[in-house]
Image 1 (cartoon, rainbow, N blue to C red):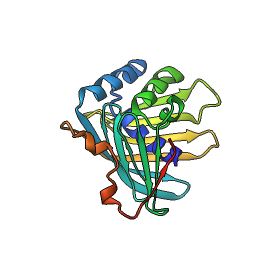
Image 2: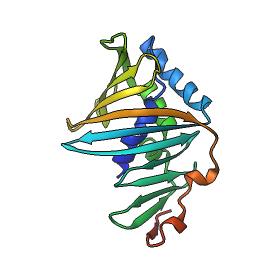
Image 3: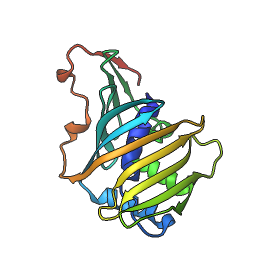
Image 4: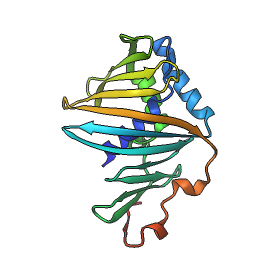
Length: 201
């Protein structure tokens, strides 16, 4: 479950990587992300012959991710993960290590500090950035990020995991938005009356 959240949230972490010097792009990503009051991305995630669609909305260090298999809310301190199949909500207060799998800002810093970035083969319509993990034990070994040249938003992200599997994220849209109420990033139990609440804090 954590890995799925991590991959979905990685979309936003890489959203603002623009064209130009590869090393400088990751720094600009954080700046552009912080400048938006909110950002929403729609995506398709494919791995091992299976795929799912969903969306993620981010505002600062808060986010909400929704797919048919899992919905997660994080308000900056508390995280709620709801599985429709299990009918269960897990409540946690993630540690710094756990947030590195789900928090967009942590992921951006990880890519800036823990990966070597180079420009790949680009065209007039797309820019490609290749990221290689400096730590050979990293969960994500390489990332190939394809960007739309005009919008500088990602159109495709291919990640190679430590076990050799590839995860492909195809992004259909990335949209900056308005400021959102804090309740957007908090689980509303009234909307899920039958869900079992499991408090793991």
